Image (cartoon, rainbow, N blue to C red):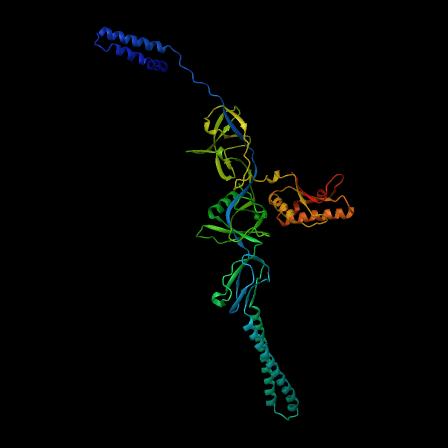
Length: 522
């Protein structure tokens, strides 16, 4: 039976039921035959109708990304913990009473600054006693020397025996040794006296005082406080054994190219998602494998001149410098998964959808590396793929990536290749030294400039008034100061080009003549 007939039968069913109800009373075989023929006539009439055609579906709106193979920089991110590069335990070297604490707990201290003062009086008494003992021994040595000088000529004249000379010589040697011993005891007493004034051996941040004023210090409670050096700061992080092997395998197979000499640039991401303005480098790799954690320990060293980083903070480190050669990256949501593996939808030349199996690698931000399955020029569907079937017509629009944000949800600064054309650094009138505002400007700029390979052009501007030669020299020194600071912040000095000073003429304002421009060439 055709589908149309079946549909007609269903539509005629209510009529047939009504007719049956009409003849609910006993009826003859002739009447039953008539009802049956009437029902068949109705069904036959329905079979003659044309079946309704389903509405034609229009093309599916999708966004597509055209595949472009390229060398893609990769960044590895790890959870890390800061550590002071030199944490010094301040301890009492002698036993005695602690008079007072002379520093503010938690404050920055300088090398040589007095932190604690012990009671010096007992130690001063020991120094005085040692000085007296030294003088006594010196006097005895003088007498022995004079006795030896008198004995020698008498022995030569046979007025005294050789034994007398030997005794005088031995007595003199003993007194000389006693002098040296007394001298050593005096130095020890003076050293112990100096230990009663306890100083910081390094510049750093101080911790709290462990003992209170008036406490008797002995070897059992000699620990007083800790001073931690803040710059440079160590950043410790670990790489698992599996990840280490994966990296080695990618390098062997040409899927990953490490920076020359393994010199990664280490960026530090703070808890709010912003980058720390100074970058560092890996300075230590523990050759031993930690069987407890299954990891290898790595350490990076980062300058921290303003003390923003403190010991034992948790941060993230980002290792930059490696690249994926000839790689393909597509947005993560373009990749779907089935029981047979990962796949993407591709728009062919006829603007129809094709399912394409792919082999994926690791994520790159909002993207996903595809190691196999896509070629240059393929148009990959990013949005709208869930509505597609094989061969479905599509209406493709170019995919627009979203603006990047930090972990805190704030907009990220432009990528290095899209940095503003110029950063302005202002100086005080007649000065060539960087003030706080200029330093802040350069720190923010350097954080973006470290990872790029283009030239950075630095240009100073000369004042409009006064001696022209002196103004040009001032502009040069300002530009040099900017260059030196950028290098100190981790920017490669080979990429920085100093331009001749530019004269400000016409209606230029004074601050235009006090500035240095930092321009990133595109």
